Length: 288
Length: 295
Image 1 (cartoon, rainbow over the protein chains, first blue to last red):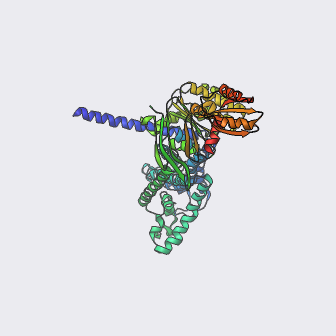
Image 2 (cartoon, one colour; image 1 turned 90 degrees about the horizontal axis):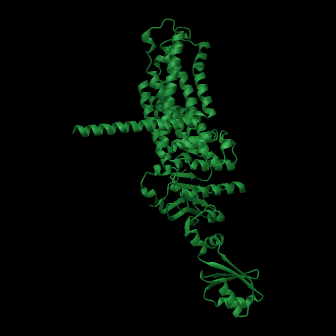
Image 3 (cartoon, rainbow over the protein chains, first blue to last red; image 1 turned 120 degrees about the vertical axis):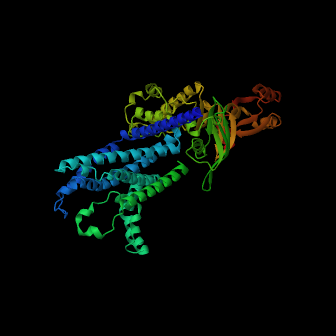
């Protein structure tokens, strides 16, 4: 009996190590494809430089904050909210772009076809892409954490240790937000295959079509104040790390323009699952 | 053991049937030519057996099904249509990607690149390569992991005469190592020179299959001519081992039984007081056979 259990235990263990080997193998492959790609190198460098910069330029803008200055954006715990919002835009552009080129480049070079012919299964190929996207999202979330700590400690005169990690739940949300944008962009890449077309649709859908759907069609059908108009996917992704509006006094108390964080997380998970399902079913069926 | 067995493979694109009910069997060590004009369904067939095109119906099985399809592909080196590589990577980096996918260990990159005559350009990015160099890199990539089977789709397409000769020589060298080779081509001469077996395909239909020898030497062709071709024709038409006579430029071409010899013809004519001015025996070329089968 114990022997049997031991065997099962060993089998499970070897299965786990096999999975680990597969995951590192697929990650290595994706990394090798991109590491020498100049555009990717530029994207990474720009993200590293621009995340703190795009956020710090706000320092010079006068905003009617409660305390009358903008410095509170850079002190604990507020720094987490404001940096997350800047990072939301960064991830929308950079990881969206990366998500699109991750797959459209391989269509263009016909290397997707070649990878499969060389000896990958379609499933393995897709898993590799998702592993890479999750890793990239994790990397930007860690970077968000580093920049947040750096800026926070620099600008906070009297650091109260409880406030440092008060809004730390934004880190996993930052990770989810980055992955969600990338996954959406990746799905468009899978569906449309051409980089230009996919990027065009990514921006047009996010910045125009969803607005029209929410504020015109949805309002017409469900009424002006229906909270459900906030349930659209890209809005949910954005509301994971929303604009830190609570500092702006009167407007904020009454309005329900943002989703509750937990609701945003739930909606994002559901939409991301749907997008993965769409990518998967199209990718598995398609001739290459 | 059979390397590849295809049963009733069919693929339709809208109203066009690209491949129609194709069945083939390929044995170890064969150099199998898929011969057919452009658009006859060769690449579609290869795409299906390599898992990138979904067949409408039919089956195929690699290595008697002893491993998964994905793992079967790891044992196959393929050059399908165009060489597909990452344009910004150099030769070595591109080969490393292939090795990573195939999980091939200790790949002799330098030797492979020397074999295809690319060693001196190994650090140049793929996008800077000429078509011939790209094609040669694809052959090197196909050899990674020492595969049991190699698939070449139009391997000499777009190459200059020297490139064509080099590629053919490389394929022959590989074949001598006892590997099974499947080669699609629309160039008869190429199939005739390289392959041991051939399947002739047109409009997705399998028209003929067998050893190159059997397809070529079923019929023998004898050309004859005499001062008086009319009486010569009358004489030969009566012969039961002559199947067909066509006249062209005052030369009569006879399709005959394999067993008839030139001297028999000569003797027959001489006995009937016809002196031949021309007598040539040739095996029917694959090209003639091909045109006959596909027309």
